[in-house]
Image 1 (tube, helix red, strand yellow):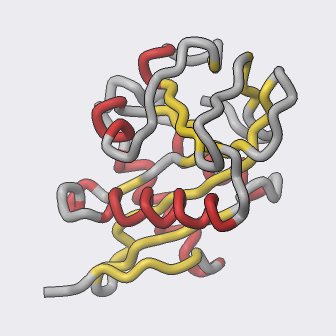
Image 2 (cartoon, one colour; image 1 turned 90 degrees about the vertical axis):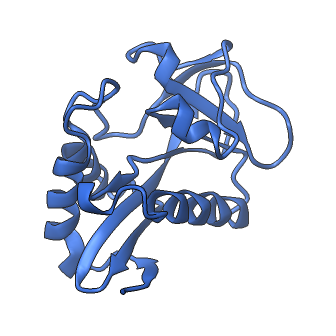
Length: 168
């Protein structure tokens, strides 16, 4: 039985991240099957503030990144967390939870005001993210857009603009 190890991504991990991210979202109703391209575009634009992988034995079992977002009301220090990618054969093993907990902890250490995510509300709700009617990403189905304040309870209002390279 292999244990899970989390660490920052290395350049040698990029092909495995691309492959697992492509497979992780097949058939998900909130996915447009562009997650691997999103990660690549954010990396190419040097917009990933953090990027972690989970290794299980010889496999890269999961990946998460975070990148800054802009909010139309001018609120600073908010980040997009995701996509959280877990290889289908490792889903249900705690890989995604480990990644999300690490990403949120790292963002808190960086002094982030909050985080937003796109995806399954049941999954992200476990970490405190929730739909906030006054904070929107108009290019995406609102039921799959969630936010979590990290520094205090204040949630900004307005539209979220994702970093260069992001296309949901």
